[in-house]
Every structure is written in C-alpha cells, then in structure tokens.
Length: 491
Ligand code: AMP
Ligand code: MG
Image (cartoon, rainbow, N blue to C red; front, side):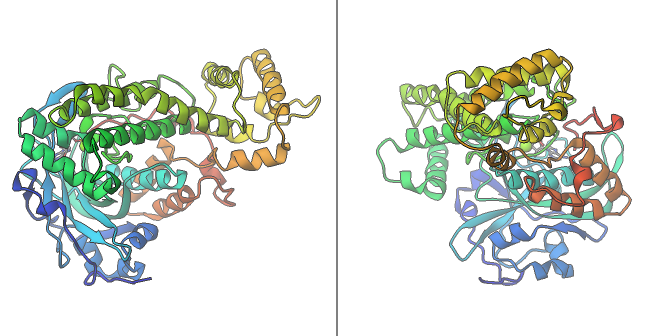
C-alpha cells in the first residue's frame, strides 16, 4: 500500500475543470490563532493512501485548518441552490466550505477533500463562513457512527480547532472539519442551472456526474433517465436505512441531498432515544416538516425537485416513471432491514403487521429504540419462556404478552436456533449509537480542551454492533438532562 505524505498526495481536480460558472475559486481564510488538530481518522486517511503518521506533523493541522495548501490543491466553493423547507432559494452554494481538491488513490478513486468552516465565500450571504467546535464535533462523530453502521455517508478526515471566537447564540470557538466523499454534488446543483435556464450547464453537470460516478451509464440510451432512476434507488435505500436505525437528518433540504445517495450535511440530526414516530430533532423545525416519520415522503418530494430540474434532459414520462419506483424501492429496503432487526429469515404476509405493532408498543411505552432492539436479540422462543427483561420496557404488559406470543409463533415457523438468531440480530441491531447527550458530553469537554471523550466515543462508534468491554456506559439510555437537548440549524 502506498504511504503518501502531505507532499506526495496526488490530486486530480476534475470539478475545477468544469466551467467557471460552477464555482468560485478562492483559498480558505485561516483563523488568526494557530490551528490545532483535535482528531483525525485513520480509516478515512487510508482511502487517500495518506500515512496516519502525517497526523502529528504541524503541517497537517495547517493544511487541514486552512492555513496552507498542499501542492496540487485547487480550492473552490461550489455553486448550488435548493428548496429549503419547501421554498426555492435561488442561490445557496458553499457559504462556509471549500473544496480543496480531489485526492486520487492507488486504485484511481478520487476523494473530494472538503474543508468546512473555511471562511467566507461569494456564497456566504449573511453568514460568517465559520463553523463552531460544537457542530464540527457533531458532524465528525456522526460520520464515524454512520460509517460504523454501514449507512452511506460522507466521511470525516479530521477535526481542527482554534481559539478564534465565533458568534452564535453564544460566543463559541471556531473549528474546521475535512469531509470526504467521491462527490459533494447535491440535488440543488441541478436545480440552480434549471431555474437559471442554463441548460447547457445542466447538461454538462449531468454528463460530468454520470461519467465520474455512474460510468456504466455513460454510453447507454436514455442515460439521463437511467441516471435519475439510480438516484431514486440510492435515495430510497438510504432513507430506509435511516428509518431502520432510528435516525433523523433534521434538514432534508434539496441542497443537503447527495446525488450519490450519501448522508451529508450533518446539522441538527438525531438518533432517537425513546421511540417516537413523530420525532423532530431540529428545534427550528416548528411544523415538523422533517420529522422522523416524514423522511420517506420528503425523500420523494426532494427527488421530484430533482426530476423537475432534469426536465430539459429527460422526457417527463420517464421521470414520472422513475419517481413511481420510489415507494416500492423504499418499502423493499425498509422491510428487508426491519425483518433483519427482528431476526426473521423468510418473508411472511403477517410480518408487516408484526413490525408495526411492535413499533406501536414502543411508542406507547416511550421505550428506547436502540436498547429494546438490542435486547430483542435475546428473545426466547422456547415453551413457557417469559422474556421478563424485555417485557419490563413496556407499560402495557398484556399487549406486549400478546405480541410476544405472535412473535414466538412466527419464530418457531422458521428453521434455526435462538442463539443463532441472536448473533444475526446483534449484527444489525447496534449496541452503540451517537445519542445526543453523548455528543454533548464530548462537546462540553472539548470546549474545555479535553478531547479524550471524542477519541473514546469515536472508537465505540466505529464498531457499533460489537460488545465492547469498558464501553457499556455508552449504551445506556440518556439521563434526564440529556433527553430533550435542543439542537437547531445554528452551527
Ligand atoms: P445548511 O443549513 O448548513 O445546509 O446551510 C445552508 C446554506 O447556508 C449553505 O449554502 C451554507 O453554506 C450556508 N451557511 C450555513 N452556515 C453558514 C455560515 N456560518 N456562513 C456562511 N454560510 C453559511
Ligand atoms: Mg447544507
């Protein structure tokens, strides 16, 4: 394996070769105080063949803290627009992030190195171009959590802090985060050229995205409609995974939707503690547009915005047909994931109801989503078994008992032993998720210059399905103070 240094990173900046209308070239604006590395991610570094020994060099924090450029970087802020809370906003763009360049690894894969919090850009509008330590820690840890859970996501390479003050509701300190993805192109990038009637640019963007990221479609008939169909599929599958793990994005605006079907732009997201279908993680989302149970529908809504933007390239009927596949793709993926959470191997007509009824019981009991599913793995299907520990999570014990009998009978209809099923379930029902209060503890310590909690949490989240001796406290439900922490877009 190649072990690259900062000096020998290899860049091939395909985005910078697109027409100038696609971006604004500019360098990051460094903090006035020297940058300091808070954490770096070895597995993300591997993706670009970067030797983790580089992390300890002062130059590492300088390059990824916006103070210096590595040779071959061509920094730029990407243009896009998007629908925010249902309303079209004609120009957004990277207001506080800069695409430093695309690092190419030995396998020829390119990874965007995208520096968030890098200062004002022409797209900053009223913003200061900065990100606060609090929000970058939340993004950094959640990328690790999603990656550990196997949910498609942008990755985070490192977190760099500074003593510079940043003004939000309170005075906070600034930080920068390097995120990585094969592409940061969003639905909103297609929308900006559509609404400006710049159809040549729209076509150039579509060709670029297809050639770079859907190369099997480059030379096929109907390539744009097939490309759209694949975006529909990836989006449906992604959101099904969010639903199965009990995670809400919080700001599913079309500018936060990845064309590659990755989870991106982490803001006021949340893993549910107590199960609540109507869970709203974003404190500013007063109408619950992005509530947990709305996400599948919003995915479709966002895809229809993308479809609209592709109208100059694709027949309306073909786009409609693509949108028409969304619900069944979503259902298929969701059912598959949920059946696995219950340890069910074959597909039975009654499964859907069995699953719904269990979620209804969780909701009525305010039971912890992650803990109960993890404990469900220990369910005994033996005669006369009581499953007492699980039962204690439910307020209405009779209803739970009825459900447990149905579940027992369902399990008995399948081949396989209880212990085998438990092992299988433990591979899909995580023990460790990034609960809000855990992130909050790490943030408060980091604000006092103690970064140890970031390291511990990061480690626990990397293998969320494993029993990790010594880490059990991270699997506990939130204490009272940590149950309803307010998280908003202000980051
Ligand atoms: P978000 O809600 O974080 O996805 O951001 C929506 C838009 O606002 C994007 O164009 C961001 O780049 C921009 N933005 C958010 N925060 C800031 C900030 N502090 N400074 C400049 N632009 C920002
Ligand atoms: Mg965004």
